[in-house]
Length: 311
Image (cartoon, rainbow, N blue to C red; front, side, top):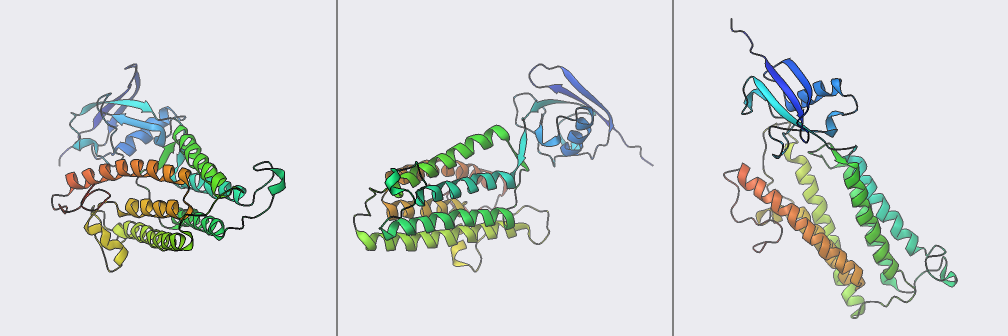
């Protein structure tokens, strides 16, 4: 009968190299999540979500599902700890990021006092496109709220509180900026009138449906209960066929929705918001595309990151 070889884990501060904790008789099949839980017992204020453990101070953090005996360490392992700061769950993050823009926009749409001149308080715009823009904006963020509660599965459990504050400032601030101009009493409708608005509306609806379809597909990727990782593939839903050409069609549809909203409103702040969003989503999409390509040897070579055949 073979004896179990236990591990010893020494945890040092990544900055000062001071020893924070020494864990004795750690099971070889323990995961990084298990080690974080043991560390938490010694330092209750550093709950697992706040912890980042690394094998070297400047390397990337170890994943929670990595197993101790599979790491390139001996039976006496040294890990470096970094405090990630206060954390908030991803569901709360998305709720905060979505509820803010939704309510902020409505404040400008209903022209509550002190936003515009007092003579315009609680008045409404005579332009149908303004009402349509409000409906589209509200629909977009209501869809995101519903997806956050019922659809999304988050691979990372939390986000640092300081990042949440920055993200909320970005989303809430831009929502207020574009809402100010779209609902302004001096706002002028698009140059090509109803034709421009109607075409943009069709594209907007198509992109929103496409975005929702992709999120459902990603959510169902492990719906069979399998723990094996798979890359997303198109199914019978035509909106998912974009997976044939890009790795992150959810971002493609998201950008398309905001481009159509920019055309619908013909508003410069919306166009700027769309451009900044496209740049950020391109960075995310490229990162995801590289990860897919590294992990799966049979990953389709035709796929690009976010724009078919181009980017």
